[in-house]
Length: 149
Image (cartoon, rainbow, N blue to C red):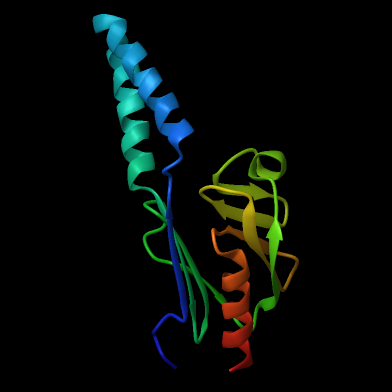
């Protein structure tokens, strides 16, 4: 089996509204002066975390790999044996999961950074995974091609 990815996507938190919101909070904490040292530190830490956060997705010969860095040190693999189906879909990160990032609800985990397109992966044991993607149709097709090999 090859270790080479047949599909790869890297996503980062680069939404303008997010950075304007963080920048506004950061500026407001600066205006409050010495009292807001904790607020300043919190906004700086959140900004640094979001700037370095990334969702890495790969389809390889032995399965689908998902890594939400810096939370995951190594990728999470979904093997072909546990994958029942995968389909490109639209979803509402806020409506269904309360936002972006790594989100859980009973029987489902979602990894998302931006947008409303995703690949819904149904796994054995009713444990679904939703992976946000800017190229959801291409991602789902890559999964289908790799599984047929």
